[in-house]
Image (cartoon, rainbow, N blue to C red; front, side, top):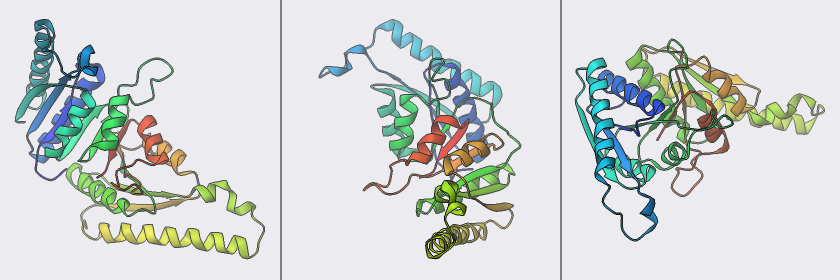
Length: 284
């Protein structure tokens, strides 16, 4: 699924973290990779210049939830090599630091409250934005395991990386790839522009962008002749199209927009699907 290397998953013992642990273990077994389960303790006094040693009851709680994770993994994926550890510090920062030595980071989406139940929590958002490796943000099992792996394409160079990961995932899981290119300008209503030079120019620019994305798709697909792939262009809003596609996909793969100095910033489309799609992989 992902090249050999450590699969990293964060847990705080919550329901969604438990599901993230299981999903990370599944990926580890599929790829033959070792799995590291990491938890973090962030004391109330973290704003001070030092972090106090956690009380014994907190240490016992953390070690218990890590042991529970080990038992869960062994009962479901007994062949996976598991390492567990915990660190003192803010959870998102701990996962970001650990991601430098990982091939993939898996984290649960822990949005809280009735209004925010479909939103990703602050830890997942921060990790997905700043992690050094691809980051898989998963809510629960509410997605189509038999569906394709949908890759959201844009004009940025980072789309090639998203395609590469999408095809590798599809090969490992025996899935198909659905590459989706949507245009917000088209959604705004090219057909409403009167015929003439402006409309011809707009349609020409859209076609150039589509051809570029299709060329990237063809280039990557040629490297995976055993994987069935489909390129789809929609005249619709990119965010809406990807969220709609996520409901019938086993996974949605998107990439940072590549416009920041570090090329790690998540654009508005990536952030939106991160908050609303059931399973999203941020490609890096």
